[in-house]
Length: 253
Image 1: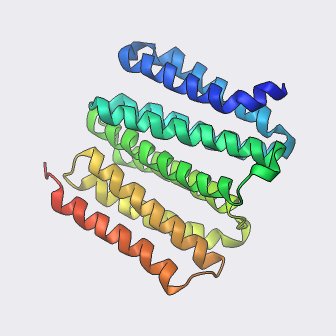
Image 2: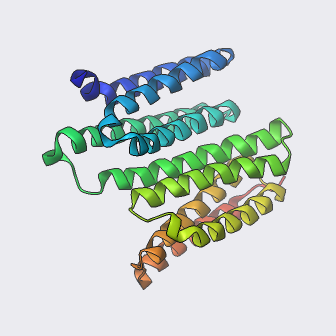
């Protein structure tokens, strides 16, 4: 069992890349290969994280589940092979590295770098939001999904990722429900605006995921009372510049 735990990061990487490459070539296999892949990855994280208790292990399982499902959903609507490969590599690295850091945290604490899991959780959540947004906006474009159903899906994923993020950085959820409600409201308004703008769904996904990054980063500092001019200015500045570039280069359809 210890060997399985030690090599689980490599198994996750091999499984993810192998199965997803097959799905890119034979997408008709998605309905049985995708569930098998997701289940195997969740089993590996459950085995490794089990010593942390059911509640903590459950959070890790949810994090992996959301990222894997979001990745698969985004691949369904992407038509650029280079972008597909980049997304697969990014998600695979995030999953494998998280598994590796978790192993070191539990069994090789002398090799574990402080805050590695927390920082990687933030990256995994951002990827999950990006992939989910690609999938949801893709459903609206290609499958004519209603905006209200798409909004429910977007809020569910964003709420789950935001909760996982706050938990990872040791912020109590119960004491900050008002803050989560405010973030949910802003997210909903932004999603509705994006859903009506005549952009392609790639651009909408980028704009939505950067909004999540901004809200999550600012929320952490405001709630934990660590906000400084520098910590508040740079996320806003970076996102502002990125939004400006995206809007200036956007193709209106």
